[in-house]
Length: 216
Image 1 (tube, helix red, strand yellow):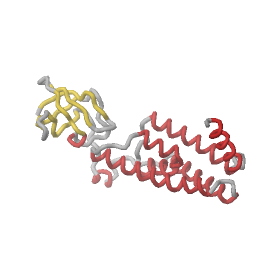
Image 2 (cartoon, helix red, strand yellow):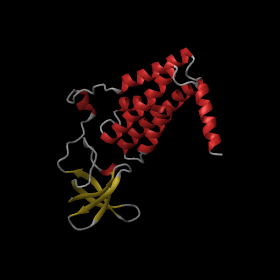
Image 3 (cartoon, helix red, strand yellow):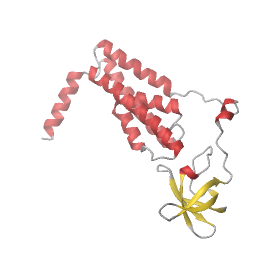
């Protein structure tokens, strides 16, 4: 076993390099790092077993991040050694959005097409969070944050919030949470506008027509 420092870690893609105490640089993939409670970071001190990949480059195997708390096993979780996961604001907000969509439809203010988009893209967003969580745990290629947020922006916010809550995914990164809250505000104003009758389909269609004509 050798020791070194984790450098140039790409968290979104799940790989990086270790600068070992022998002066060599070793490629390391997330799948070769022991399960820990937090994600690997630049500057982490590690121990590892040196090896080579199929293409002959130096690669670190059986990597242990020194000083990191190991991730609890399923058996530990079942014994209740971990604090139970508490619900957050995401479920109530998703429920509020669903209620506003139903209210808008009932009052005839929200077009059926937009309601359908919230359902269809919401399902896609929920599936994207589920897959990205699975990819993160297995060390596979990740779905970009831009894609996840783009789905939430383009009518997938309800499914996105449910995906974050159910899979406990993207709930701790402050910048991501901040962007999600901004998108929540955008959709809240949008749906409230339709439900209250402030936004009308006819006016919206006319505005779109005018904008298209202006750019011709």
